[in-house]
Image (cartoon, rainbow, N blue to C red):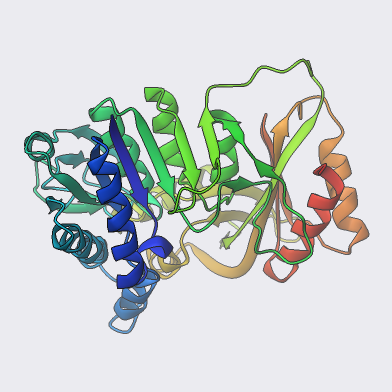
Length: 398
């Protein structure tokens, strides 16, 4: 059996954890399995590297950020390979470029365009465990190192599973699977899911669920690759993500999760700008500074008829966004999104119920956005925990 395993940063945060994982991988290999192992950077390494860059400049060149951030996963891959070899289990480590992860030339948020894993195949045939640095690739035309954005190691894992038609793709993290909300939020009793379909899981991840990167789920659905999310020790069932489970609920409304993101900001444009002009200068500014395209909410401010675009993006991009748009808009932080996700939201009272619940708790709604699967609100960041608690208590049945 060919198995792809991805270990998150918390799973490889110390040498002791790496050795323990290596022992488990040796056991699997001795059972006859072929293994491709994707690793994230150790613990908070990526955050530390971002902070290190900000001590140099708040608006770093994105190309150099990729050079910096890609070093984190290289540390993990080398240490994991060392651990395996020290246990008598032949292994070799590869960077994203060495393993043939070919991307476009978008720095900090590159998309995988192809996988030519020739060296990975050669080493598997030599009966070695192949360790790959997640989150990174290379543009084959420019030879530039690229990164896939926060959570991109998940996407690396799915891409490798697809390239090799793997029997399994396991995402190992510090929780036993996927819950109806972040279990770290105080005052909630999150529901654990034994299984979820791609569509709902991707929507949950898009609106803030941190267990999986939404792009990895999208790729898994395209390639029909089942994913399993569980603890590094693989104790318990975990959460299986695959095709839809058809139910007999017809069009009944069923809220499955409440998620949030505190990485939200507001771009207030000069009052003379139309929405078309605001989007145009935003697009041009993002392209000029090679900033990944954020999620966008839109509203018109009644007082002076100016345009506000609320965006969600990694906070380390905010300074570059403000720099790119300094002549056109002011960026304000301190906002959050909170979202309820489920089926049967169309032609339901869910948005009215959700807004009423927030109003009862004196949580002002700044703006909202509805889709077929989610209702999302922009609120002040200070109300995030209370909003999640309130909506989860109202909508999620234990």
